[in-house]
Length: 288
Ligand code: SF4
Ligand code: SF4
Image 1 (cartoon, helix red, strand yellow):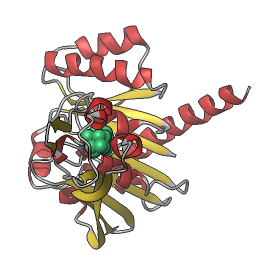
Image 2 (cartoon, helix red, strand yellow):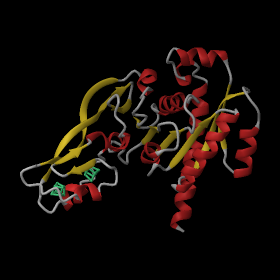
Image 3 (tube, protein in one colour):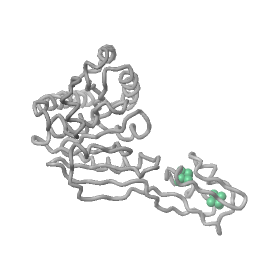
Image 4 (cartoon, protein in one colour):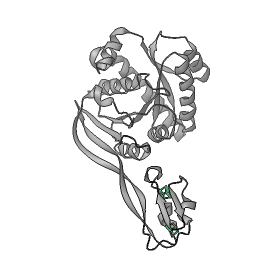
């Protein structure tokens, strides 16, 4: 089962929930945590894994052979990302805009374009006290997160429980990281900003056809508009974590709820049981 842990807004405690869930399940089942928040991966701060391997992530960008090129302009025409500009006597390539789709080299009538790898990030893996751990890191200054996310997600095999820490927001990297999940947990807080971004996140997740539920973090800090919205939209609030100075203190030291306040393990276990029930029920209804 693949569980995505997302939040429309950054700083809602998404990683705290993902890592606490992983630690609460690891004694009873095989658990793998994939940190797809590749611009700022921080699950490692909570899990402190021993990294045992890493691999560069490259995308293929065009290299033009000026001896063969006739400056016909076809390559720039087909590039949807404006990564090529053809001048009367030169072809300019802007590698940082290239998505590595291969259309230009495929369609060049003179076969003047070859491809060369450009590193955009790295995937690292290891083990964190029985949890299989994988994280992606986007190279600083790089904008192309999806290829790194795809490589991290290749590690989501069908065995056990896979928990994915999703980047915040609702843009392309989020869609890439969430798609193909069985369930999406949306972590939010009861504030106007939390509600605004939750609404956007729910719209995105619904478009992907993935069932979702909410974890309400820092309950007590704001109003009850998030609860009202969830009731109206029939979205279950599956776990409520109160605004609590002890939790904030642990969080600031990189200690999960499951470690620092072990009584929470039962709550996360129940959260997993509810997710499993929802996923099983959905699978049964899809088979009918
Ligand atoms: S399509 Fe090929 S031949 Fe035409 S400008 Fe581009 S590289 Fe040159
Ligand atoms: S590989 Fe695709 S994105 Fe990159 S320059 Fe060629 S057409 Fe544009």
